[in-house]
Image 1: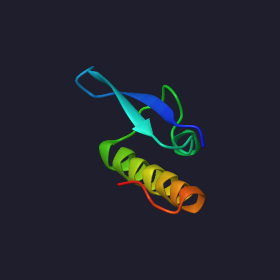
Image 2: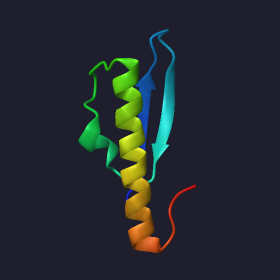
Image 3: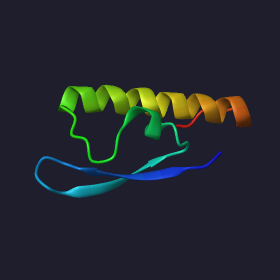
Image 4: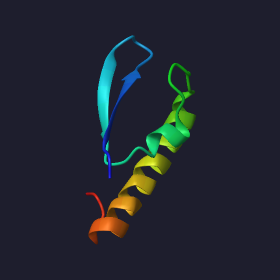
Length: 64
């Protein structure tokens, strides 16, 4: 299962590299697109939950 490091640019211009244990983040985010904070939080929560579920299905335990 390929992991993904993705970069977020926050409203103050800071960039932060984030980790996902799966490529599922690419299903919910488009590079270069801006998202309102609430939408970003919802998408991130869904993406990380799906990634954790994929890890659990493959390895028998979810991400913590």
